[in-house]
Image (cartoon, rainbow, N blue to C red; front, side, top):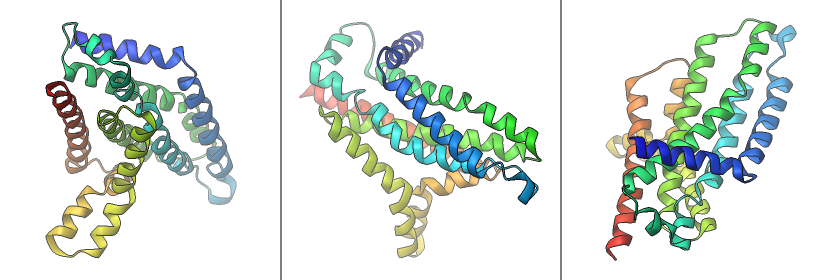
Length: 240
């Protein structure tokens, strides 16, 4: 575990050694702040304060940003050959993958933490449902974890960062839109399977303030399977 934490710390710092983290934080805070104040503070007309505009904006912003954050994780290592150099040290593929995953998840968590002033300010403007606000943040973290793991998996499939980005985005679209559409097309067991794979359904369940073990298991399963797939991809490349 200590080796994973070392890799996590190194990868997290590397975000701030480049402009990537600063660009993400600037755009993320700018977009979420703008739409939160534009649509979420209409207290005098609705007699309530809402964070729904913030959660909707944050959801789509992270959906687009996360593939950009993860596209170089493994692809760049494969292209430059530094993955072999890294593995000359006493670390495993899983520790490398987990370290990169937690580093990106931590960056997302920091981004969300910086939006807490939006929450506090709006709560002071009018009545707000604190339960759904808290589960909304939890939903964003779980959704981000799922897309980060998918991004790392697609990054392990290629040496090209752009290809990794597009693969992550396309896979995300399946989880975000296409599985929902397919669940309405097919009936019976097949439709139920596609419906369960629909990420947005599980996210919406959590953001409504209902924490169901089935939704938590779904997100944790996606994370575990995607990271395991990334490990298997690297092991296959090493064997070849």
